[in-house]
Length: 115
Length: 112
Image (spheres, each protein chain N blue to C red):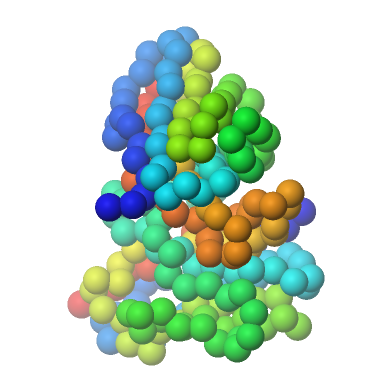
């Protein structure tokens, strides 16, 4: 079975600093990869996804993630964070089984932006 | 607005009581899921349904049951609640093609 490891449970950074949230998954076979964001007291929202093609994927709010098959990683980065990026971030890997996706989530990384 | 509706938003429940968490989607997605979210553990799959009329067990199914009588509804039932079921419960749905999940806003359940 797939598993996902997010290496940092909490990441504090200063506003306008760069950030990287690390994610490794267990299998090197073809997978779909996702990052979800959860703002305080809300549900999860899809931030970006890798399905195939270019290994660098971007979101509309400046985050990007790079699929690295050899290292089984899908780290999330942003060159300059804002206070509004404070949230919990979940990496997830998907298998398609019997016609449906099964997402396996990491433990989450809480990103705290300090002014 | 298309999406997933969960009810109730929050609930305090006495141990031993029965409780059904409701989940309805209007996107005609084939698959639906129930996760629980606990601090430090991320999201863990409780039960899932690939299509109406079928259900399957996830990672932590004990103490929970589900049904999928139609495409839109996927209720989660706790037959006899215990304090360890205190958690935030999220319902999600997906279609084929790798688009990921759409999540509801969650139900915060406290069992006392």
